[in-house]
Length: 146
Image (cartoon, rainbow, N blue to C red; front, top):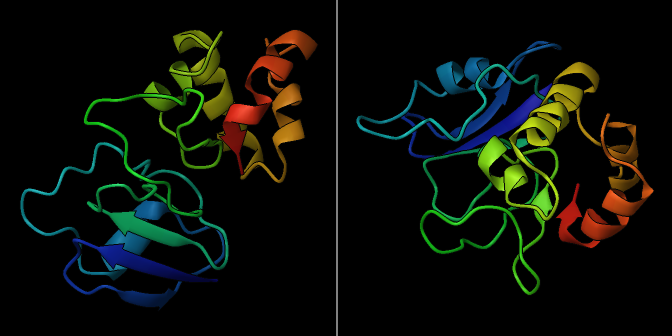
């Protein structure tokens, strides 16, 4: 598999990694993060997919793959009408918890589904997460993307 590691790492670039590699493997391949870079938004245990981009310490970029989202105000979470949609494949717990009707327990279930099944291929797969019924899905489907 091939991934692109960008941002605040020692050696940004495109790296070939074995199938089943994790974000941490890509970070190590790029020589690690530069000094004092906050890695808390990276899920370093998440499995990578071919062609993915991992943005390290880049304000406004998704932390571990997928299309970039515009940066919101510092400390903002989730998505509100008029803001950039939340990417189900890269959002952290705080961003998911910020969605209407999604609290910390449901946010964790979304992350757990992603860990167990890999990337969301479509927003409709959100219905497979325990606790997301038709009404809740209708409330948030326009606020999320894959």
